[in-house]
Amino acid sequence: MRIVRACREMGIGAVAVYSDVDRASEHVLMADEAHLIGPAASTESYLRIDKLIEVARRSGAEALHPGYGFLAENPGLARACREAGIAFIGPSPETMERMGSKTAARRTAQEAGARVVPGAENPLDSAEEAEKEAQRCGYPVLLKAVAGGGGKGMRLVASGQQMASAWRDARSEAENAFGDASLYVEKYLERPRHVEIQVLADQHGNVVHLGERECSLQRRHQKLVEESPSPLVTAELREAMGARAVGIARAAGYTNAGTVEFLLVASPKSEFGWEFYFLEVNTRLQVEHAVTEMVTGIDLVKEQIRIAAGERLSLRQEQIEWRGWAIECRIYAEDPENNFFPCPGRITRLERPAGPGVRVDGYVYEGWEVPLAYDPLLAKLICWGSTREEAVARLRRALDEYVVAGIQTNVAFFRRLLQEGAFLRGELDTELVNRMLAQGAARPPAPPAAVEAAAVAAALSEMTAPTNGLRLPDRQARFGQAGPPEPPSRWKQAGRQAALRGPGRRGR
Ligand code: ADP
Image (cartoon, rainbow, N blue to C red):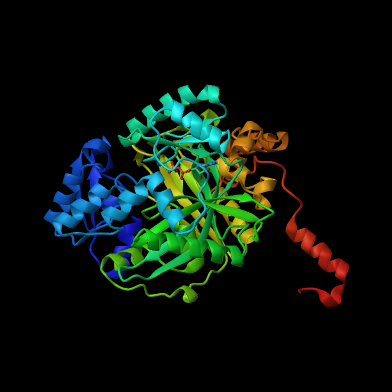
């Protein structure tokens, strides 16, 4: 839908593909043309390069956008497009191949002068070799899949005794997920911050960066909340990281939109107070691209399409400016109280937030059955504010407006996350969510007795006197009144402060 919207604004027709269970999906209804490519199992539909190329040919498509899931980082699809004379909206298959291997990408980054997390140069052959490498860089280490993605094939190894079993587990997970069991070892950084740089590169040698996104709030190495700018990044650090990311993109012969990911650890020795280590390159549009769009005003999908059409970048680095703050929450059909287990099913009621500074990129509607077959990401809620405080306040307001009934979602979990002191202070790290969960953050707070009593009273009065407006129990469900006690009214506080300052200064 994100891509169809960009096409529509550019006057380009859009052709979608879908599997059996996605017949009534909103992207199908929205596209100019849609083609069935197979059953629910993605190996028989969305992962079939031959079927995608056949639809592209049949419909006369000139270009193909791979989105950000399934085959988006698969060089095979880029190559098949090239052979079919269809422009692939992404980098060349050669660049995708090189960046798709974490060890090859690390070498490229080093050639471009970047620091990489200490670890193995090449894929390792055995658990014994991995142990040697781990001793060299010091435990704890991470065993990582060379072909990795989505946190799969990754194991934390605290000591030599754990290596053999971690090696077996990670290998089989990597083999299942990527058809490639190769592993390597990286030093495990304690509580790092994940900060990534968005780059754009055209086919004429121009490369720019669009600043950073902080993605430190994660669960199981998967991003949950992303924001731009990052609370820790100064203009100087942005310039240094941006220049490094542009250098890596050049060294990789990169074209189109891409993301260079870094892990940051506090370091008094560094001029920025932080040392940044290259992590990997994502050779596609990121899920979290919208926060960059909101602070730069640049439509990344349109830029991708123009680059693939051979146009030059329309902006020089010095023309790129950042305004305000944007934060995204990934809304999933999952149950935080049940270890975030996916909860597909029929959506019986849906009310999306709206209003100033609110963007919802989602595909579900009332009555839609969220399929079991795919990642249960329902929507991304992105809020913009002129400051971080305003963005957070908007996000809270928007989460309170969000109603999804019939299935479990993580909306209430985000409401609690947004009250966390460390989050509000911008003190983020990749373990913060785990620490919150250990303290019981997945459990809903018990409703105060007064709220329960009010609900009972409202239910009773409803039985005798029906009202036309919003009923009290509804209001409680929607506006989270069953949450922690409210702070004192800001309005009243402001009034009191104005009164204290005296009549002459009121209204300032
Ligand atoms: P994937 O490609 O599977 O997403 P990444 O290499 O991008 O894996 O890492 C995903 C996340 O895993 C990071 O954002 C970070 O939270 C964690 N991680 C990866 N490497 C390290 C490391 N060396 N030390 C600590 N955490 C790491």
